[in-house]
Image (cartoon, rainbow, N blue to C red; front, side, top):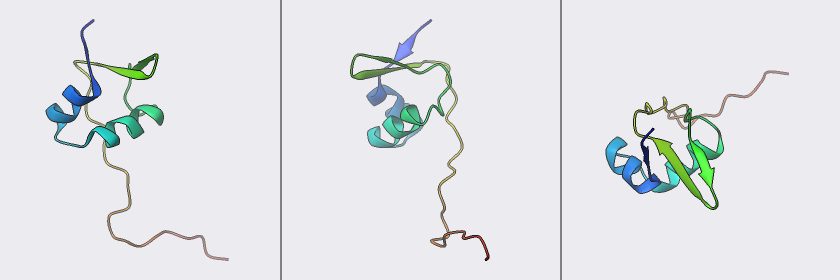
Length: 63
């Protein structure tokens, strides 16, 4: 299986290196493995959906 670095994946998906690190740490990229202090991401991995809040409003539970 072919793996890409975080930098290569960031260029491929058009997002920042830091965002890729966060996605790997949250285990949202299937097949990503950590080798020492580096992440190896499968070349055929799909970019996960962005689940961050974009409206600027936080969802709070009503008491």
